[in-house]
Length: 346
Image (cartoon, rainbow, N blue to C red; front, side, top):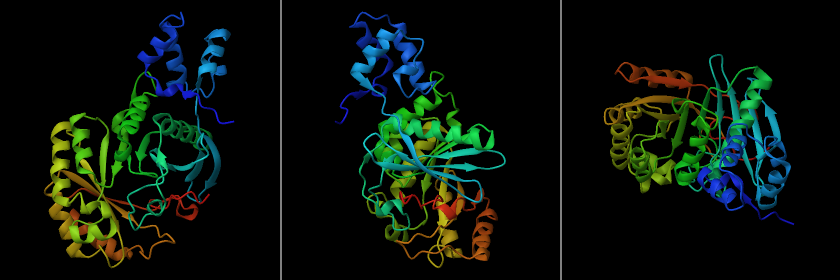
């Protein structure tokens, strides 16, 4: 029989205090439970040993902790670890640990599937089943952090919301998860070590500015003219580059956070010097750095990665004009864990 109890992690600290007070419990008990959930990452009420047994039983009668579990793991030759995480309702999402000499990065998902249908992305060929709850996003971070400690004896240093789904279409849960990850009452990670990547939803980018978020923002750009971007990213038809430039500048003025443009170089599609010029022109409109990404082929699409010398020329064109450029080499490609490859293949 399916458990219909509410996940206690959906309650705010104040709501938890009210619920306990109505049952004759003191307010500090809510703080204890909150700490067990978000600082100590408890997966069951039985773990909450600072609470009396009767109180643990009372809470257990009314609430659940819908923690995810690791369904399976794959280990790449380069150290990357891809995990399929099983949710309480049997859906799967994927998360990735990306190790480097100077950092340990968790790539987490925000939705089960995706509704944006970007033509080069494996997740875009899946249906969107539902948004993830804040606790389910948080759980991915906790699990991947534990992987980093176990496999590399190193702490997690960075988080990127670049897994399955469009984070800004799950706005409230994404921001709530970041609050629990960054709060001193939660995991206490610096928001500057968190990057949220969006395919480009102008009104939600402006909302991020209004909310004065402190994490970093990345735009999956991949083409700096509307005609080409429309062909690979249907979202661009309702969120043109002009609209995005306006929204990104609004975000920058509100937060002071410089934006990153993610740009996958596809062979004979967006890798010419004319394409580089378009990108350079766009960077003059928005204070941004450029992250050039190698393409990771998928079975559903015919795109291929550009040739190495063309990639180098593309990057040099931008660098010679004062653009801050980095080139991100593929990680975890052999286990379908690289950028654009997450599709629950297991």
